[in-house]
View 1 (cartoon, rainbow, N blue to C red):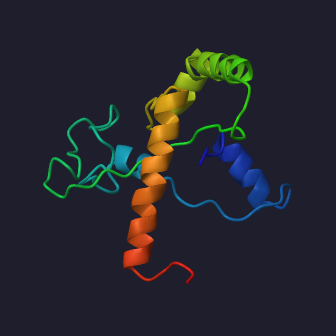
View 2: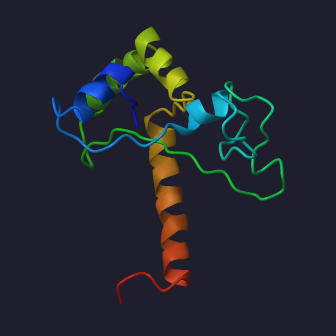
View 3: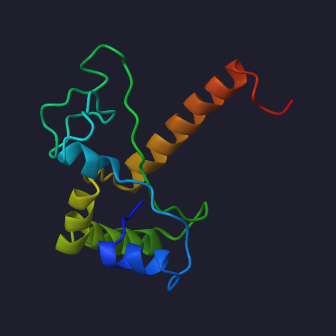
Length: 140
């Protein structure tokens, strides 16, 4: 989610000058203005924005829930192409504008190289498949 740039955009939309649905209140904004109180974070470590809010793991729940994203290509892709793409996206990850956006979204960089991301994806898909099987949610 990337919020609207300012209230002017929201106002213009509500006055019929822009299509779109109503804006959902921004929970981080509510926390910053003390309209709600943060009690738990679900990342693997405390956030920079709210360093006093403990993680679920710290509270003994054994849960870490993040929203990672990555870029993948077809199996057997030319390693030279993989390296070129990796290097370009790694440069973009480290770009100050990207880092600023992540900060605004209260997210950190969760960089993994190509091999580590592939391992993470395989392990995560296997773990989630076992959970879906256990819950009876997979097709027979």
